[in-house]
Each structure stands twice: as C-alpha cells, then as structure tokens.
Length: 337
Image 1 (tube, helix red, strand yellow):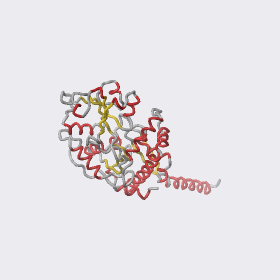
Image 2 (spheres, one colour):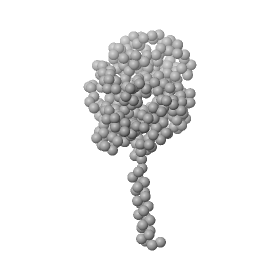
Image 3 (cartoon, helix red, strand yellow):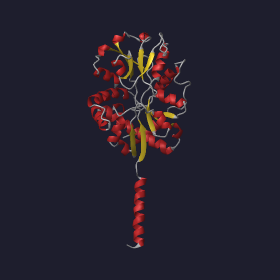
Image 4 (cartoon, helix red, strand yellow):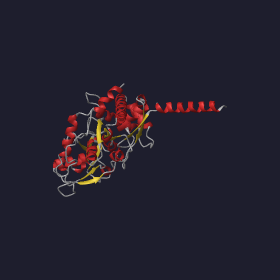
C-alpha cells in the first residue's frame, strides 16, 4: 500500500472516530437516596424505555444504601444530580453543599411513625417514656422537628423519649425494642404487615397529618454549576426524560415494578413487594396541576417553616436563599415528548 493511501485511510478512520465521538450521548450520573426499588421507578423506566437516549443522554443510575449520603456524593463530585429529601438537602446546603432543587418528584409525604397498640400509645401525648425508632442520615430531621413542636425532649428522660437509631428495617418493632418505628407508606409499613402484624394491631401517625410533613424525593443539582449552559442543558434533558419515565410508571405500575426488578442486581426485592410499593408511590407522584416534577413554592415554604420551627434544635437556622429554581423544569419542556 502506498504511504499516501495509508495516511488517507488513517485520517479517514480518525475523522470517523471523531465524528462518532461528536455525536456520542452526554454522560449523566444520578445518585439515588436508597437501594434499587420502586421508589425510583421513573429513572429506571426512563433508561429502560430509551427516554434518556431520546434526549441524547447516557445515564448511570447509582443505587444508594445505608452508608451513602447523596449530598456527600454530590460534594465529592460523584454525581451530576442526586435524589434527596428536602430537609436533608436544605441542612446540607446550610453546611456548604450548594444543592438546588430543580424538580420535585414526590408531591406528598409518605413518612409515618408506626406503633404497636400493645405499647399503650394512642396519641402523640403518650410518646414520653417510650423508645421510638428513628432513621438518621438526614431522615431524622422531620422527626426532631415534630418532637420540638410537641415539646417532647429526645434525651431519654422520663418526660421525653428515647431515640433508637433505627436500621433500615422493622426489627425494633418486631423484637419489641421500640414502641414505634419509622415507616414509609410504600415500604416498611408493609414489611410490618408481612411480619405478621394486622392493621388492627397498629396505630399509625402520618407526618402530614401531624403538621410536619415535609417534601421528600426531589432532584437536586449542583447550584455552583447552574450557570454552566452545558450542565444546565444536561439537567433539563434529564428532568424531561425522568418525568416522562415517571408518567409512564404511574400509568403502568405493575410493568414499572418489573423494570425495577430487572435492575435489582442484589436480587433482594420481590415482585409482590415492588408491585405494592409502586402502587403507593404513584399516589405520592401525582397531584400537581403543572405536571410531574413541579415544585409548588407553597410546599417549599411550608417545609422551610416546619424546619425552622424547632427553636431549641433547628434543622436549619435561617430561611435559605436560592435553594430551588423552576428554570430547569421550564427548560425541560422543550424536550418533553
């Protein structure tokens, strides 16, 4: 082969590679708040159905776990966006992690405190003197706010409650280590039922009914990078495709649950539990007249007010500025299908 022909082929190959690279989908990593389950079905659906690919994104969905704090992952540069609850995100923001809510997936709170009736607890005024199971890693903030609102100390004194740092399971209630435990409408409550309890054996206090229901799963971005047009555009595409995934999941809950199971590399989840969970999750996602993912400013203000109400041990010490934006949600509309 002549050298000119060889170089011609080499240059042509290089140009082909370059052209392919130019059209490669943009990489994007989302860090979930917890393990692979129907709580995050919309993201797995969007990936499985090609919704991310349709907006030129190559998305990596990173499951969470008991030792993974999404704000820390963001601070370390390990994700382009994270899923977090608003109390945790705002607390992290006040500590220096520039988190900004760009899309609010869950429109309602699913958090509850589930108690055994045998404990004698019939209302929150019966809490003092009992042990209550509480999740930490940012999930404790609504509980602490609630106790502060009730004027109940969390120091284990006779007039207060003893806080048991609850693992992400229901063992403390089953083993009678705690009178009440933290549960979600879509997950742990049903684990208690599956463990042999009947609904009549339990008394449930929904945080929303107690006036301390705060916003839960939302998409949080790195506020320090929102001025970067390329980053903001990737976010807009991600939000558009994710919300499309959620819309599909809500309308096809059983099929969405099966997609979640297909992505569970641990094999820990079951079809029965995931289908039941997806049915409950759908109730939390629906409700905004502005469309999936819209953050109602009134919901944000209510959450901030609740978090600031704990005067003795506030979750945040001042009203945050710039902690949310509709700019990405609005920009996502041009990518909506």
